[in-house]
Length: 400
Image (cartoon, rainbow, N blue to C red; front, side, top):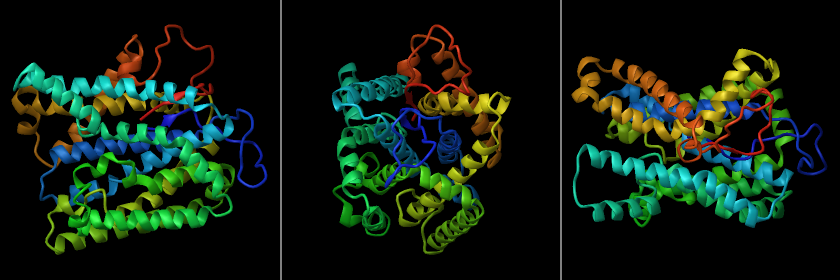
């Protein structure tokens, strides 16, 4: 699941009240780790979903754990957007065109790809019906199972003035804001999971609407307003955060197992929009941030690992966009050769590695051509940068 927004920055010293950087500051390397690990788990979600047996309690339990990706993705996106805006406010007439270009163009192009490719594999209907399908898919985020991420991200873009206004208006009362928002989130996801008739009006599109993630969007925005204090707190409490993350993971698995005992199949027991996943997403977000802070504190700027992580962060959006196409192709290739010759559960692990390799290859090719923007969400640059990728702070980032 990537972040859409400018490269996160942090301030050297906190200001009064919420910490606001007034000048561009060093790159926040902690978030590169959060971004890469989140997208690695996005690929895991989709690989398990397509290759694991519906009755596999272990793999579907792992799926329940990695379902945090959408919540962490939107919290991270909101954090980067608000942090960037608070550092360097720009008029919406400049902000919106750039943001919608960096995400809207890949959204439109990949929606077309994910509609046309299956049609070419198995033609059905007319070209007119195909065009109607495309328009409907663009409006609803249903061209393929992951593109709703971008649709919700664009909703966050549109709502950014409101989000920033709420964050500023509620300064001094951010805890109250998050408690109310969190309670509403738990109630809504509780209805999705345990009382779906109450949300029947939204169930068909619950994943495509920002309201299903409003707590995490606000959480990221508030965290951005307190970024210096937050990162200091994370560094001081890394051990406790790690223990809390493990405890919450255990609680999530326990709820999953109880749901199975209650009659749900493993897939239904681990759906992403349910209360325990909301709690787990907060815990794992902190856990990933703590891990990112540990990396940042020991990072060697010109080392191989630093360059690799910087490159991975840059490529993450393109990998996200292309990986389902690679997954689909691998599973269909040679009349389902892979699934016919690799036994489960090993099929999941083999497919996961192949999908990552394939998505990286597609993204690397795209980044080196004028198709970089529509296919990888990054502007194409024909000349190399003068600075090392690991130390440069790009003016804009668009990862998903």
